[in-house]
Amino acid sequence: QEQGDGDKTLPWLPNDEMVTRANSERAGSAQCMYLLNQVAIFKKLNGEDVSELPYAVRPYQIERAELNLDGTWDFIALIYQAQLFEKLNGGSPTVKDFPTTDKMKEWAAGNRKGACSARKALNEQAMIQRVGGSEPAQLPYGLEDVLRGRAGMNIDGTWDFQAIINQEAMWKKLQ
Picture 1 (spheres, helix red, strand yellow):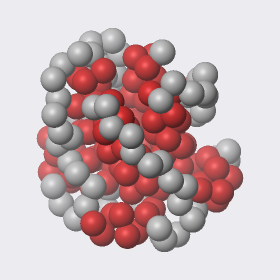
Picture 2 (cartoon, helix red, strand yellow; picture 1 turned 90 degrees about the horizontal axis):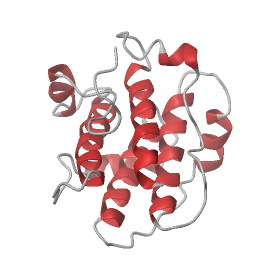
Picture 3 (cartoon, rainbow, N blue to C red; picture 1 turned 90 degrees about the vertical axis):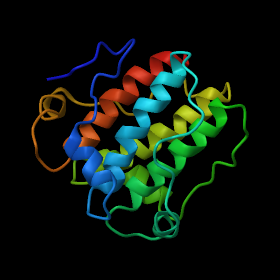
């Protein structure tokens, strides 16, 4: 069940399990870091003073973002998220394409496992562009109703489903 109204609070808020996972090196930690950072960025979009993200991108995540491994797109999403935050704070980060960008776009268009990780990263890139005042006019990837219904289940992909629902709320703040 979504918790926030999408205006003052994000639709999906992290729970204690996500904080524990974000502070670990276990699989899924990057997804949880991302959701926790979304809360901070949403506060910033609502005019609150937020000077830093709770989770900085870790050096090994930057290294792995260049590779085609499990988790790569979650790391890319985290990197783009940090750049979005920098942009919201008046900076001008260099948003780069990664070696897997083409594959990420191909994957995002399908329904395979990992599609929502790819969509999340590409949406984050679009948000950076949006803050810069350029297109796209809409968030590239929303979430299908069938996946929306799975966001509250504790299954593979749940955290990515929640992240994309949150991105939809954040996009409205960027208009």
